[in-house]
Image 1 (cartoon, rainbow, N blue to C red):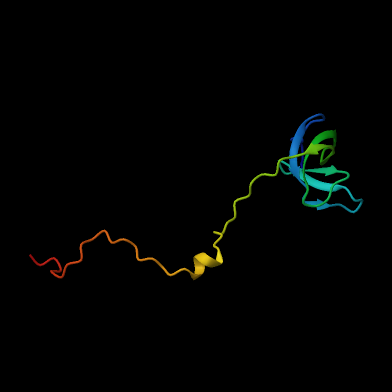
Image 2 (image 1 turned 90 degrees about the vertical axis):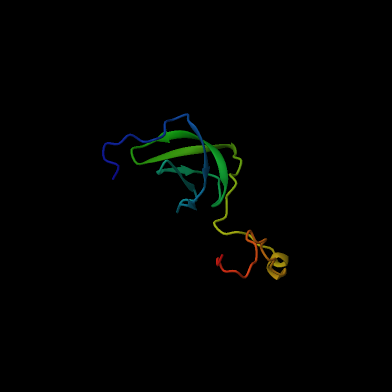
Length: 105
């Protein structure tokens, strides 16, 4: 499937990855630039620092070298508290003078 493309990782490199799934043999599955890397001894959802130990044409293997700092994920939705929902709406300050001449001068 990869054709003649070079894998985007090399033996000895370190990367911070999220474990997306666990394979049939119990190894964690992560992706580095779309390239599948198997990582033993992790669980789905772990965020770890790995070192690449072996690279094949279509997959790589790595070992955990430490925990990675979890990136801050921004929610796609605004978080609103119950108090904010229940609070009475404030009237926005009007930028216009309230007159009754309707532009007739």
